[in-house]
Image 1 (tube, helix red, strand yellow):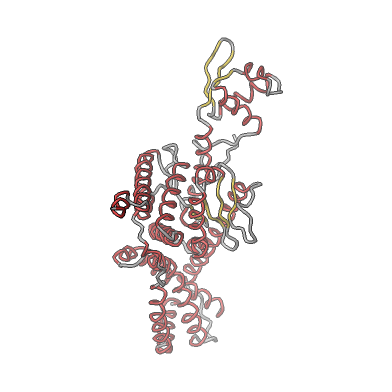
Image 2 (cartoon, rainbow over the protein chains, first blue to last red):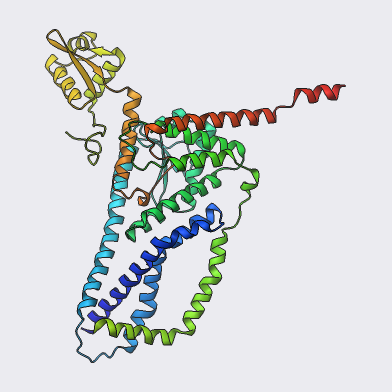
Length: 309
Length: 152
């Protein structure tokens, strides 16, 4: 009963912290737009904002709830689990199971589509580490798939309409996504579902696209080639009015205009400021948590008692 | 009817067998055709009833239009080859987007599906790109007056 109660209480804390922080992130992320950050930093910040609830709830559960229960809860008591921990514990299990199902279904869904697009398709060019493949004509024009072993699929139609330079810079854009592990990040999003997060994910996606544009372009010719590739590939999939799902007109317009305003100074790779700025904050938070760890455990245990009652 | 992308019921691109594709190519190349005309060309070595049934299936799949001509039907394609390919590509994207959580699928697209209304936007963007390319070429080319001044 002690172990069961411990598990229920831990899961209860996990789901409460997760939901509270997720609601906070879903409501407050728009304030981040006021930050004067580069697209690269904005993508990092939005990603952190999206996964923070999951990270924080795991840290709180593992670092505070489980130790406080183990250390401060008397083992001899014959206390029941309680209605609230049982209900919230089940909710947490359902949430985790749902997240796992979403990840698995996304993987299955994607691998099926990709195997269909890739049926009998040769690599695009020869090399020891070929990542670009020529997919079927009816496949999406240019797509990056996979997390462990990413592949860039270029449809036959895309190969026909793009010039060599345009194709090169367009593949460079997808390679930038590989370096940023963007597909893996999307899987992480799927693992931690919460209502109202779609807008945040879309904003991250747009920032990630602009970052990949920046990484792929070295000079003004590259910028023009990428802009031309964007327009040409968009034409390939511009068709019936019924097919308007996922339409982000502003995104394409913004991206092309941004590329047309390309300046050489942008090619200077600036360090990811957010990552370096976050380190001292994380260290300070860890130090603070260490200093008040004892009282925090006692407070957590009080909360646990309140929940179990 | 088996669809390539069953999640997109009404407007998705139907899956075609090899013979259906062959017939569709023939109709595209001829513009319009009756079953008899297709057989008389000599490329199709199937029974009249097989061709008729397959053409009827293509009509029911919404890929062909037909009108009565005497005692037979005259078929014409509803879509061009390019339109069908674009439709199939869009279907692929829509299937992935159809889950409502496209942004979180482990795929990255260079471009997203656009609506017909944005064809004008693409034209405008194309003009801007061409103009910028011309400006760049003009800037790289040495100015003719500069050379004549040097000679003076």
